[in-house]
Length: 153
Image (tube, rainbow, N blue to C red; front, top):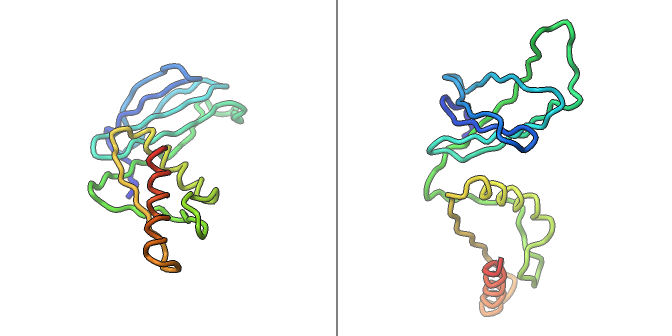
């Protein structure tokens, strides 16, 4: 469940350089003055939750000259970590008689890779299964070939 969190640590870079560190307020919000024509990256963390990132750009933003302060809101949410909980990744399939995953699985696997990249403390166990269209010994060989392929990554 994604929720706004009070006292989440927020590390901010501006155009790739360290800019500021702050915390969200009691409502899970933060206020910050940003410079025009810059790229910002927000890295959020809090114990017991998955880290998250957000990219925000002030480049080419329309400025309302009638307002002294320009306000932009982005909802930054963190997912609670549930230990030893099985998570099923959808849309990952093997073609018939193949031990490698097809290109249609890339979006799901890219999301998983990004989650692991920003949460290096997380350890996962991957598993998959064969269908029942071939004999058990064939499926065992095919499954082992897929396992060996994953072990090389």
